[in-house]
Length: 370
Image 1 (cartoon, one colour):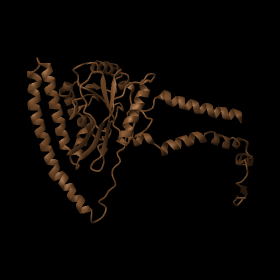
Image 2 (image 1 turned 30 degrees about the vertical axis):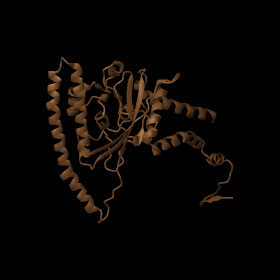
Image 3 (image 1 turned 90 degrees about the horizontal axis):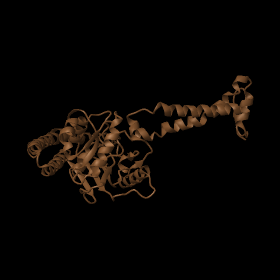
């Protein structure tokens, strides 16, 4: 029999009811409720501690830097040489490439956009090719090595493409192969200027998370675009936010209730040369591009997967989860049951009050039993 000795007493740890023993040993009346009350909240404390330890939500939005390899006297000089090559040779060459690309693009896009207004079909076709060319220049400025798997997307009515989302460069990598019309958050600065001047020529649709009315307007424009015959293929990132390419968060159901074919696209980046995840809350897109342009290369795989349709009796939410399963398996990503918009907002007061009410009712119920 195991016993615990102290200076004043000896406690038998093999007793069948340790709770009864400890409660009986407390002489003061007001302390008799101490242990039961602690036991009442033990499940809640366990759940809270488990959520802190296994915080799969914040893990989705954290960049995981690679392990340092320049830790000894032999490797550090090689690392310094690599820094010199990237910043002194590669970066200036990439800036020149990007500048020349912009010169060629603008000198062609502006005349086409204004001089061919009466010939919309030809104007849209040339603008699509120019946008694809400019996206290829962006990829070249990162020394992008992209492998595309599967048949190339084509223009068909009543279809929408959905992909997992790691950075805004997802759109650029996909756009250099096919002139997609994308659903994207409206950005300020030079990115917003490009959105309103150049990208609108391929039919892109913008939204603002802070405006509730945008959901209805964007939904209507999405339906009109999908059912158009001559419109560019519609590309949607249903996660609604950038995730660090290790996880997939919940897909919004808007893309899956359009009554059309859904074509999944899986994107997986190789972190050996650079981590392509864009943490928009800590880094501007300009600094993100500079980090990519001072890296060795951006390496990724893109899979165009088999088109999917809504099955009989299947809800849009179930359809979204099925497509998320397909993308997650192909790209080797882990699914988590989180809404990506929680990254931008706090839990609603109604949700907190409901949790508090449930906990209070459980404590009162136990006190009545005692």
